Image 1 (tube, helix red, strand yellow):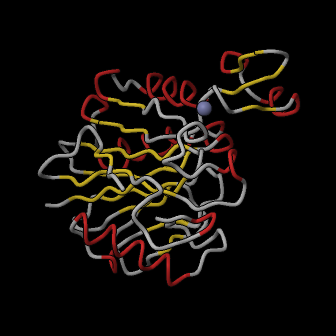
Image 2: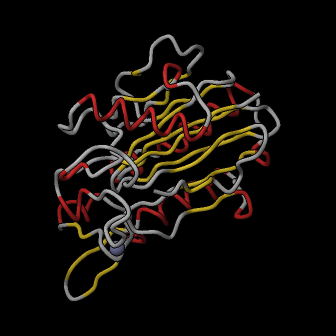
Length: 243
Ligand SMILES: [Zn+2]
């Protein structure tokens, strides 16, 4: 197992991504599956989340996670009383000691941090959510709800499926901006990482304030990948204000 620290992690913010190893799940969920929506035994999921909490110094009972639905809904979290937030793909908070989790297996997990206003967000941005520009929904909340200045917002995008592997059919290709479609040997491939990058740039996030993982979850077997294996577990990104 290895935790991939977000590039902006510091004494004020905990921020990292997991890979698929170091947990107790077996079979297609081997082994650090964090999602309770993919058919794995709930006891394994709780144990896996506990391992991550213990290794990284947060309380599992405070963990906020989402019933992710490929939307552009981002919900504001003001306490950790409810752990599972329904029907959204993004959560945002300025409260300390509330870890926010996003789960993925090809979709992009995104962690966002305003270092001045001390506001954090965790986002799930797959093909559908990226087309709906969920990352922009979150960034707008930073500015409107919390008064963030765009220049202070830092973004880390974790491992996700690359254009090397993300084959799409004609129907989906028709709905997407041509700039992000690559044709190789008569097959179409979608570039989600570039879509997300352009959305961030469009909002005014500087290149120096973003880092997008080059890792393709489908190529790299250290990650769960729905495209590679079908039924599988989920890895995660977690962010929390320490103080
Ligand atoms: Zn790939």
